[in-house]
Amino acid sequence: MTAVLVAGSAAAEGDVNLYSSRHYDTDERLYSDFTEQTGITVNRIEGNADELIARMQAEGANSPADVLLTVDTSRLQRAKDAGVLQSVDSDILEERIPDNLQDSDNQWFGFSQRARIIFYDKNDVTEPPMDYLSLADPKYKGMVCHRSSTNVYSQTLLASVIENHGAEAARDWAAGVVANFARDPEGGDTDQLRGLVSGQCEISIANSYYFARALRTDVDGVTAEVDRIGWIFPAQDAEGAHMNLSGGGVAAHAPNRENAVKFLEYLASDQAQVYFSAGNDEFPTVAGVPLSESVAKLGAFKADEVNLSAVAQNLPEAQKIFNEVGWK
Image (cartoon, rainbow, N blue to C red):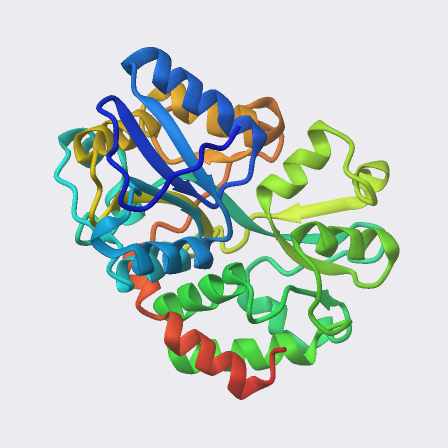
């Protein structure tokens, strides 16, 4: 059960106060095993990422928050820009988390990943796009489903296109994708997969763990027709597949700073990394950690190793481009 924290209250020794926008029941195992190993109790506040960041700002120096966990590079960068995180000096985190999956100032670290995959209807598409840029090819006009420009996954993908190909190419790409939309952007990632099954579109983009979940368990509107859905890990002859990050950092005014660092270091352990894959169909960020069966079914691929801290700097430009090309 989520613990209730009160700003300004004295934090008991042996606690770590976690603000989390990860809403997965399977994360319970992470918290209970950390407590079992260390004796440190995990107290949680769960909510929307932007609301949690605003709350930490409002609480200021009186905030009880020790750790912020959230999803996507854009939100991690938002937390850094809001001044609610602090730099961490940890040999364990430096050794285990790849440089491109952590903040340049060590204010946030990535602990799990999701590949941004191109999906297609095998019944209708014989030559699917092999990279993100090809989604703008006029031959796919009226075939593409995608999320809205306000979605963080969309924003970070475009920010990575800017980093890899430049702002002009990114603008041309975004305009081309808009021209190829089968419908106005709507819904979440699972809805993009449902769009393939329902025939609303023939090509879509979604994070890998939504599809892996449909392979592992019954997902309404997807699993029953999952065999008709093909997938492409994009840009395998170039930069590789874009990766969305789930990660966290130590709060700027953490009352239990030492415990907060221990918690982040635990998330980088082999045990925790296995849980991220087995419990939520994600890819670990630590090399060599075995994948769950559902994730392994997706196959081996080359991931884009672009520095996500650099990608985060392109987010304002990405939003500007979205507005200019009319990506709703």
